[in-house]
Length: 181
Image (cartoon, helix red, strand yellow):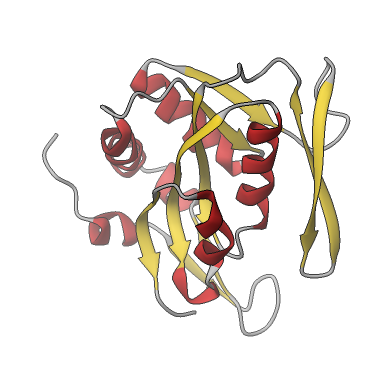
């Protein structure tokens, strides 16, 4: 497939100014997803980064994390763990509550989703403030899993979300970075 340059993929992402509120530029990945070339190459590029790192399973939070997490798991030939909002998983769950800009949110994972010592790759579409992926990491660790890496399609580096992950001591990889709004 050859090496894909992040700028080629960035060109497939639509910018929506003033969404969800004035002053914010929303990075709309639906345009990348509907382009078969861009979707395939973004998944392959992220999977290739982790291909020889002994990852056992991928965990990703709903909803856009599911898109990339499941596709990367398929590409790597490993399992996928859905991390969901409360009340969406049918079996016994472990949960964690985390801070948002205004208020809190909660994520859940099945109690038997991660085996102790398993190497878990966390995947999401976007790193902004780091709250969701940090909560996902906390769940994996509660169940005895080892965070083997954290992967994003996009990182909004100017929001400094990576700093919220520093103490995990793992590699954080983002395919596309934005240094400003």
